[in-house]
Length: 267
Image (cartoon, rainbow, N blue to C red; front, top):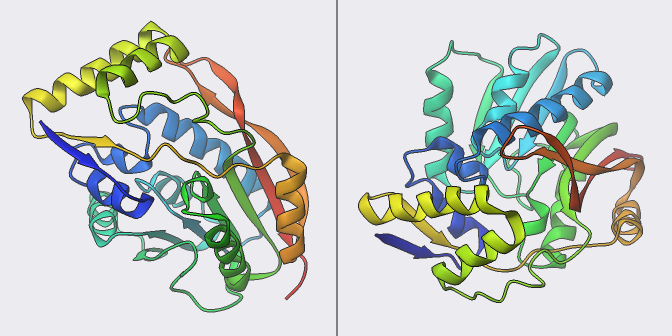
């Protein structure tokens, strides 16, 4: 069994690249269907708002699902994705090359607070499930300032899966795998417990990595988060409860996370 204990999110996702499952770098172990569901909903929002010849970037693009989905649409002139480790970039690029080459697509190494693009070039920015795993509030603010820098005036940023409560408030299991499994059973039910137990067993009998991650996320009440973003030069378009699907494929509303859409209103 190969166990890795990550000190931060960049290190965590570097370890995730050791998995044979590309979806692991989306952060949703063994739940590719959730990744597709979430990104299809994101693309639906973008398609309603984004202009023709849109320049789109996914900051923290996971396994590249949104990049792949948006490449099927003709309205996108440029489709960019960034990931924090070169290992992730290589895996996503390799996956994309299995399909027909699309010159609109570009995957680069970068961080949310250090994006390798020029000022004022993107019409739509997506940052889903990223801000919550940053080290601290200052890094979050630096990331939002950096995102604003690369956006055109009157363009949009979708901030997805931002918690409004502490999701680890009752995580009393520390680094114990057995205690974590019982926590899963208690909080998420038998189906998720079985799925996670299989993950542990698979790691025991194969070279598949098992990650012990930090029990910490950034979280803000809706009004608090909105005020923080608006001070940087954005205007709230909407704040909606995040939606996912359960193990049976049924859609449900998150009890802990919002999705936000903001418009850049100042240089």
